[in-house]
Length: 270
Image: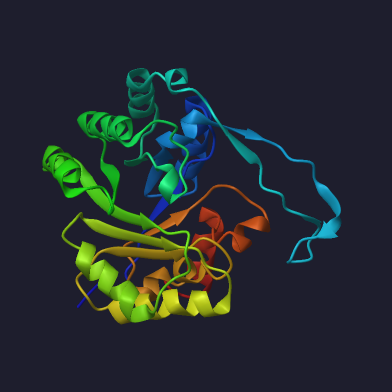
């Protein structure tokens, strides 16, 4: 029997592009009852550049002007002092932390090459962080030493962030099974664009709900938040949320952490 109707861990992905911004968001997440926070290290090498708003176009939810996401501009590699950054994060965040350095091939913003990114992940593990996110597609000869270094100290999230739509529910479930020995938790995120995609993600989670696998399945786009909202019912081990607010979150498949927990209470999941 899996974790049927048990409360998943709530992981808040911290917003911001500086250590100070992330520390402030971590304090808000702590107050909101998050169980842990995710620090996207690759976002420290990025800055947001606002686009001109489209004042006459209505958003799909008809709540106002169309949401235009900011343009992300990469920063030089030497703009971040990784050692002092990891130390500041360790000292400034009370909750357990997931350290992630997402590559561009999976929608991230780290500007260096893969060998440099692996060095960042190695430093993250050496810092004694609670969790580290290691992509499933990292080559085994590179990934295995990271896994070995993490043993006994840092838990591993085996992740996949695809820019393609979700495959069939059975294929998603098989992906979880195939990656189950690559970390303590398998995280799969697909590009979702509506009801059909949301249902595939939901069905895959439903089929896995009584398994012994630890998984977090979600979408980035319309319908991607269904598995987050119903995570306790679906046996998910962890749910990613944000402290951001706004109607744009649902069209990105994201959800505010406080709203998520309110939904669970309303649905009598806890």
